Amino acid sequence: IRSEREEDKRKEQEGIDTKNQQGLEEAALIGNPLLSSATTLGVGKMKRKWNDDVVFRNQAKNEPKVQKRFINDTIRNDFHK
Image 1 (cartoon, rainbow, N blue to C red):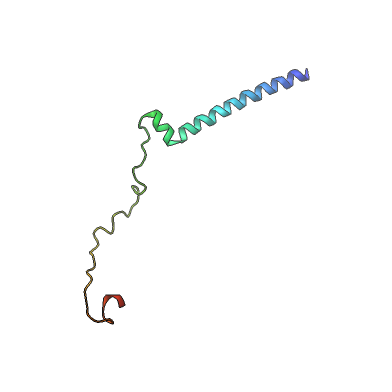
Image 2 (spheres, helix red, strand yellow):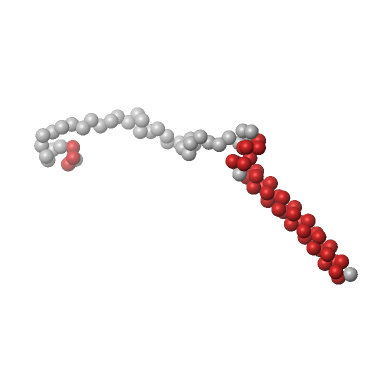
C-alpha cells in the first residue's frame, strides 16, 4: 500500500512539474518581445530609438550659437570670461 501511495504521489508530482515547466516556457515566450514579435507578426512593435519617449528632446536645436569674437588682448578675450 505504501509503495502504491508513493508511486501515486510521484506521478502527481511529475504531472505538476511538467505543467509548471510548460507554464514557464509559455511565460518566457510571451514575456520576451523579440520572440513574441516573430510569432505574432507585429502586435508588439519595438521602439525605434531609446530616446523616443523622452520629454525634453531636441532642446538645443533652437539655441542661438555664440559667435566667438576676436579681441587682440590676452586679458579681455573670451577665454578669460
